[in-house]
Length: 152
Image 1 (tube, rainbow, N blue to C red):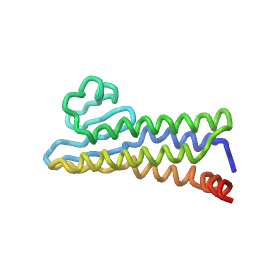
Image 2: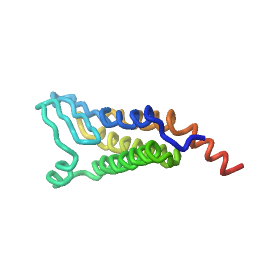
Image 3: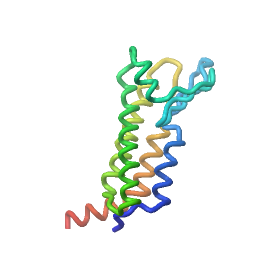
Image 4: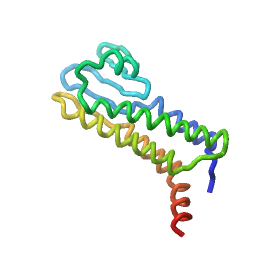
């Protein structure tokens, strides 16, 4: 069972930075908002808000479900660090990396659900799908072997 993340797997982890983690659409001419690890991009009017600005400048009156976003970012950054350690040093526990991706996905699902209960807004949790697929595809086979080794 490999303890090393290969370059292709690490690139897949990096690609999650470019995937919108959540997409909110507005039925009353409000455009679309894309939530990424780095921030938000709104289409109407076109503008970007970085995650640190959102939480350190615009913190007044944020609903609780918004805090799922930085939780997912932290979990993703830790998964990325775990994959990097596996790539560079050959020491990675796929249960940790995959588990962090799944937790990030669950947090994104919570964020999308919170956005979806608002009037005239629909949220699509693309990050949840992306994180779970990457965890299953890249890390589940090695994690399953680790579980088998522990329980045998």
